[in-house]
Image (cartoon, rainbow, N blue to C red):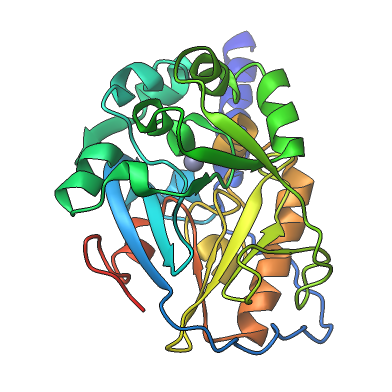
Length: 314
Ligand SMILES: [Zn+2]
């Protein structure tokens, strides 16, 4: 009798766990979408992907409803945005000592993560002919280890921009802010705070038009972390990119839309309900603005469609 209860309980537990991986797209309200403001006419802005490392994972761990049969390459990358008035990195990619940085994440996550380093960010930039000291800023989508590792090698000259909510979170959050706090003690990055002082931008309630010409617009995207940031880049060609950090790991997170499965969501998302709202919001944004390319920080399939540094897309 006792054995039977144990077996039934185990089966129920496995079924419950299995359910958390079953595809359940989020409900999208049938309200009209808000278009993005028209493209500005700004020349000389470019975008490229600087691939620095990757972690082998499974689609099933990246988006709820993803397959256990399909691998998912979780890229650790930075994105270079060049504007006539400055060269900026979105996120910092991998540092030379990324192996040590990875030890700041929980054991369970490390145990299922197999890291391959392509080229640390400073070396990748130099190899492509860009002196890292010529960067005018690094904008972090958020403060987690895999977005800030490269700061360790960029020195204390390049200003590092985050939202004040994110700085506060990184100081406070035991796990998520661990490498951030270590880097504060060692590399001492020069932190700067973004302020969304430019009012609404399309459906986004607040924004910051960074260069003042409409080419690069920062928008709040809180949820994954309290100060997560989205960065919209408008190219002269008419192409528009929105970098969404880790709001979704896989593009399906926005396409379906669907959140991360429970297991990984619990480990990484600060406010799961807010992430769900953001995913629905981004899904709506995508269907209303089909020309927009939404770029999750880790989806190597999306990055592969973009210009690879030292190539640039204008
Ligand atoms: Zn990440």
